[in-house]
Amino acid sequence: MVNKLPLTNDYVFKRIFGQEDNKSALKDFLECILDVKIKNIKINNPEIPKNYYDSKFGILDLKVTLNDGIIVDVEMQMQNQNNVEQRMPYYMASNYSNTIKEGEPYSQCKKSIVISILNFNYYKRNEYHSIARMIFEKPKPEEVVNMGYKKEDRYATKYLEMHIIDLPKFKKKNPEMHTKIAQWLWLFIGSDEQMEKAGNLNKEIKKINKKLASMSLSNEERNNYEFRLKAIRDEADAMERATKEGFSQGIKQGIEQGIEQGIEQGIEQGQKQEKKEIAKKMLKRNTNIEDIIEILGLTKEEIEKIKKEI
Image 1 (cartoon, rainbow, N blue to C red):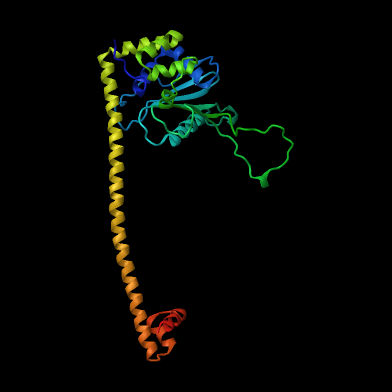
Image 2: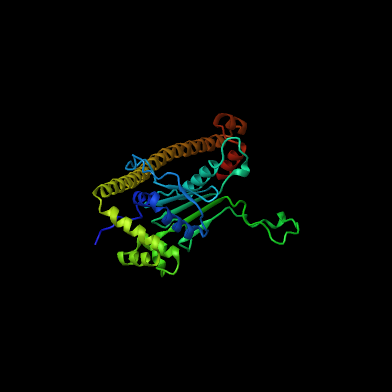
């Protein structure tokens, strides 16, 4: 039995789905995620960058053009870098702006879609496949205008779309393979038996399963996978160290600031108390209130209050 490389690793994912002869499988996979019929598909960045093993490189995403110019960015992410909600809109907006050239009208812009397959739970949602678009919020009652629309527009734009697939939620759901998306996702995180069963239900999955087994036999590919895995672990360790160092530094600064503020407050309170005692003595000697104000810098209200304590 071949110990297969995991498709949840972004290097392995791109190495498999970025190949030209696997385009039909990628097409089948995207169709079930997007719930659309795809006529044409073009892989825009099939190559693996030379610095893929560098922890600073980031995620190996796969950019694909569909049908009439729709851009889809597919990424597999193993580690939670706590930036999903920032990174996904950035990819989506960047790809959207690149669909037209300088001087072309906005009407030529094409739809931009981002698909993030996460090996961790990120959003507090109760589904393993979340779809997000720009929708209109519920208006304030005082801002409602009766324009006679029987059906209002729900979306601000149909040109921006995000899909988030949380693999741990899928595993917890543990669905049968009645749907194509379930078949594909069991290929990512299922046992050998589940992967084989999914392949028996879908010829494209069977093809990818064989390609994955073949790739797993290559020492070169295993070394490349290990390089990438090490880079991801190093990045995770660096983030953890930075977090701990930042936390420790924050505590240290907080203590130092607390001591400094305490000293300042103590001095200030001592000075106020000293002025109060001097004011009491001056009042007992019938010193003019105006003179006390001028000498000690106290207000008339403060002196009246001290006077009541005598």
